[in-house]
Amino acid sequence: MAYYKKNYNSDGPSAEDKALDRFAELMIERISTIQSDWKKPWFTESALKWPKNLSGREYNGMNALLLTFQAEKKGYKLPVWCTFDRVAGLNFSKGEDGKRTALTNENGENLPHVGVNKGERSFPVFITTFTCIHKETKERIKYDDYKLLSNEEKKNVNVYPKLQVYSVFNVAQTNLQEARPELYTKLEAENQLEKPELHGEENTFAPLDKMIKDQSWICPIHLKHQDSAYYSISKNHIVLPELSQFVDGASFAGTAFHECIHSTGNEEHLNRLKPASGFKSSDYGREELVAELGSALVAKRYGIVKHIKEDSAAYLKSWLDCLKESPDFIKTTLVDVKKASSILTLKLDAIAEELAQQRNEQQNESIKNTVVPTKEPVYYASVRYLQLESDTEPLDKLTQEQMLQEARNYDDGDAINLEFTHKSPELHRGDRIAAEDDNYAIVYNPTVGGTYNILRKVSEQEVRDNINRYGIDGDTSDDVKAVAREMAAEQFEKMTHERMPVFKMENGDLLYIQYNKEKDTFDVGTVTNTAMIVKNSFPYDHNFTLDSNLQGVHEQLSEMEEYRVVMDKEEQCEAEQESQVTEEEHHFRRGR
Image (tube, rainbow, N blue to C red; front, side):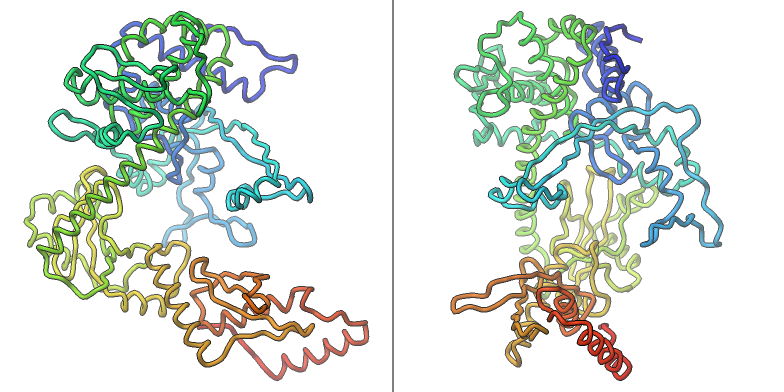
């Protein structure tokens, strides 16, 4: 174990102190390894994909960096992590009443128990939680609700961040592979290592090329035929050697990422840089570590191998000294790495998405010219998704016509799954149409371990019929939800031509109702000479008819105190008796 000073308070180490100890130990080990051979990359070429939890949510920059170091150190095969409680949750389902029921197989037998292996040691991650308090009412607001407020409304809320430590285990530290082999196989398929997204003869990274060409980074980037790469604080620009001067595109990208991370420290952004700091100062050495770790993390995200910059190798010893002197050094450094790398990845992700959209538009235009047009509009419903090598290997060898024949064989004619029905066949970066005719499209994605998505073409009317027959839920695709909203708007407009929906409330108020297609809600309020003043909004439930939804809104409004008449005890008793008689004479049930 690497030696360093530990400064705890009188109560002993806190959870955060212990986490920082682990982080410092891990960083000292990694930097010591690179110091012995500074040409080694921060992450090996065969390293794992970006770390994520068992639900598929990716960890942020700081946690991702350390979890990747830990996975490489331990030789884990999957970048999937989970808490103790999350693993335990795989053994039961929870009902609406909160009661837990053990999961069983088709024979009613309890599934094998999933748990963390005995003797395994967890690894800490930092998660920031937020407490939101309204300044005037002192009411506590959920953070998700706070994010939906306007900028003006947010000014009335105090937000208190709190850094909390959670303990996680890699799936290799559990018996998941033995107890849930089907889930483990799925995780393996989802986390196959992708090849770097490099293009052209020089293997350049397209989003970076476009960012430099369009000068869309936070400061200008100049390519010059000279030997040094640097960020100028005073001029606020980056200078890089030309691409031809680098060994390959990956080396160029790594150097560019390094200088981009430096540039995030200017006073207009993270205000991290001190112009007066000399090259030999501790502040400058720390800034070099931020740039090295930040650029390595960004390169890791896009599958690019990042070696330590030659100029930065001189700081290896000073980094080790700082880490050994104070583990707090790693906390402040990692926070800066997280912030800086986030700025760069957000920019590159946006450009990558733009490039993917352009490719899709070009391909769609090409398809229009080569494929017999089908009736419009067309939706694509997934009937089979092949991702295991044993499933996809036969398709790799087929011609387009043979693929389409296989598509017909795979399609059993069942009702379409609205969760996997979309307007475009290409949904993810790397999707390519391998074959298509009037009835089917087969999409291939080489970047996800070689997957095939077999899609049946359906009309909008077929989508509408399925919505009417089965309704929709939270998993339904956004494209199908848009159709459902359009259907609700059409039905509401048709109804308003026959009668205007107005509720006369118990207190005498007249409430008007409108369907809001954008928000998918019923807006209820009063009408003035100029407009309707919305007082309440209710979500539209597409699993029920329009009349049933209106009835449901009326029931909820009737329960609100502001629309009820205040009665004395005698009047209240008479009303309850009258209500009982009414319920005995009439039986209503909401339904389709």
